[in-house]
Length: 103
Image 1 (cartoon, rainbow, N blue to C red):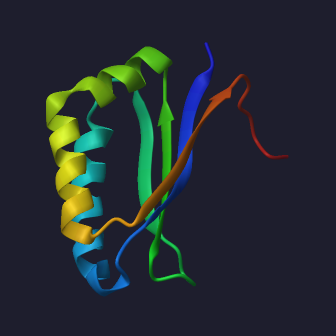
Image 2 (image 1 turned 120 degrees about the vertical axis):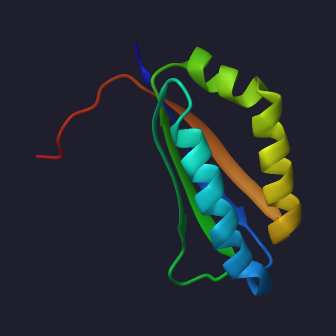
C-alpha cells in the first residue's frame, strides 16, 4: 500500500511568528497521536519569516481522510489559521509507491 505524503507551505503574518510556532507545536503533538500518522512536521523557513513548511506521512489515504473529517481537527486548524494570520496555504498530496534509503 502506498504511503501518502502531504507537503507544502503555509504563509502567515510574520509579526505573529512566535504565536505560529506555539500553535504549530500544539497541532503537531495532537496530529502525531492520530491512527495512521507516520510523521507530521511543521517547520520554519530559515530565510522567509512568513513561511512555515508542512510535511506529513500517512500509512493510508483512509487514515488521512479520517483525520481530516474529525471535527476536533477541523476546529484546531481553524484556530491555528485565525490565531497566526494565515495568508496562503499551498499544500499538495503525493502517493509514494516505494520508499528506501538515498544511497
